[in-house]
Length: 189
Ligand code: GRF
Image 1 (cartoon, rainbow, N blue to C red):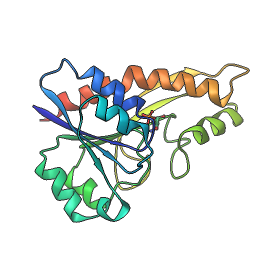
Image 2: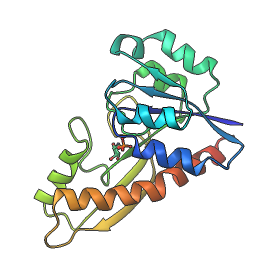
Image 3: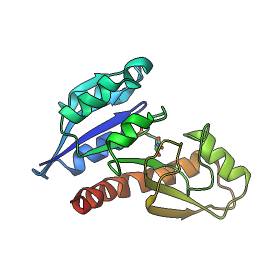
């Protein structure tokens, strides 16, 4: 049985899609959702999906006790699905190649602190990039800089706007993130 923990901060569309994808996979279980934002709609989604939600504040999230709690839960893979805090070094060390993130751009460009959500698409459109896309990558102690697992791309149209690009990227996330997670789980020893 592979045990997943999904970290969220926002709407939770990736959480929703991942939960639906693994619904029929009886070897994979989403053990909990970890959330740092009491206003996140992802909390409502987790409740409807009957997945326990653990709310965290900054202090607890950066504590050794939180690392131990995740280890005691026997988590095989931590999935960052729109989670906006940097992952503490101790947690990265305790879960080597067991934390993955999705970034809504083709890293290494348009990544790092401040590049999240709309800010990413605004920068890509302003730079008139011919392509954008998603990157699923392992998480290390820096923002958006771990080993890349997979990327998928889309072309930008002449009249692309940040909103229209966000919609295209969202489709890629929904299509590929669960598959990338499945691939990582199957490649674990
Ligand atoms: C997505 O755009 C994802 O690429 C980024 O944060 C957003 C999360 O959206 N990491 P949601 O909360 O899963 O709807």
